[in-house]
Image (cartoon, rainbow, N blue to C red; front, side, top):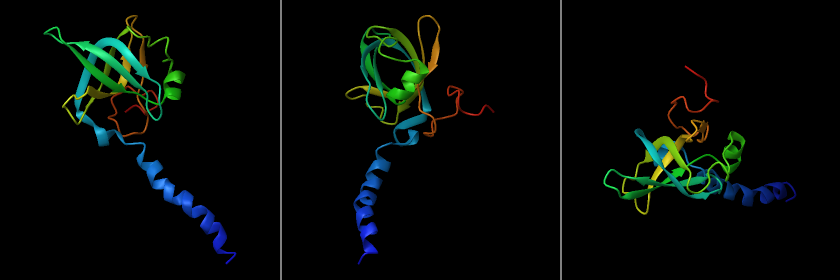
Length: 147
């Protein structure tokens, strides 16, 4: 009976492991590598939450209407290390985000994209994605080996 005790203590933790593994998705699960987007708009909201930060943009269309986009970035910690914080992404800042649209193109309640990099009005460009999620190797991630 004593030999079973360590396994009995591990069992509850092992049962929780699959849920933890599913909580962080791969790029291909939600985003379309064949649907690149280039979004220019003003930051309307920022969600500094794990596992991914979300930047909300108001993108003005050719007809004058505004479409709301939710752009998924890396973890808040990764973005902070890259130089993105609440001051650099202040509400009202106009930015250009290059990324990939979600597979669900319905845009309800907002259009969604995975952001690869963000460009500021002064020309600074910062990688905002997540390494190793299966996103296309498009040169945006400075940590990926160059071909």
